[in-house]
Image 1 (tube, rainbow, N blue to C red):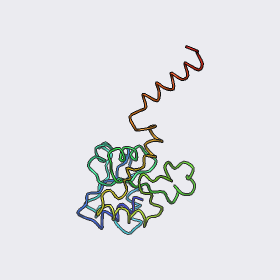
Image 2: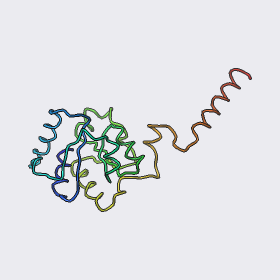
Image 3: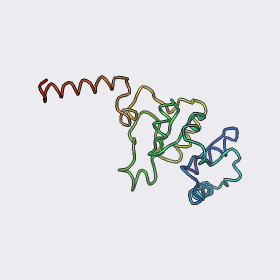
Image 4: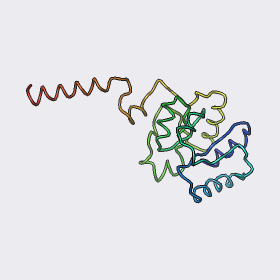
Length: 170
């Protein structure tokens, strides 16, 4: 995935691309550099690509048009901010870790099932910044937060009232 992001940045030098890691860890940075090297590029030669750990995900999401995320609150936060969101689900995410992958069957955003699909979705998002944001479905939001229709308090009150009337007899 990081190699594809590096390739995308390399091929689109006018677009600022950020890879966000949770905290500074040399091992992760080395893995990202290696992933980019594996596709024949060097991180240091891609001037519009940066690796960040010292900026909040929320700040980066608010400044971005397209977000790539995996098994993270970044996905829900991106959708809440109405951002085009891509979940890469291939390689180990589609093999040995398959049962641990969140939202692999969603329609709320785009699912990339290969390096080519991820690259193509990133390219398409340049033309259509809403390419991978589908507000007509709220499956991820409902699963993550429950209903998001503004009626949660009313549902809770009704459930409590029904419980009291049925079980306590007031």
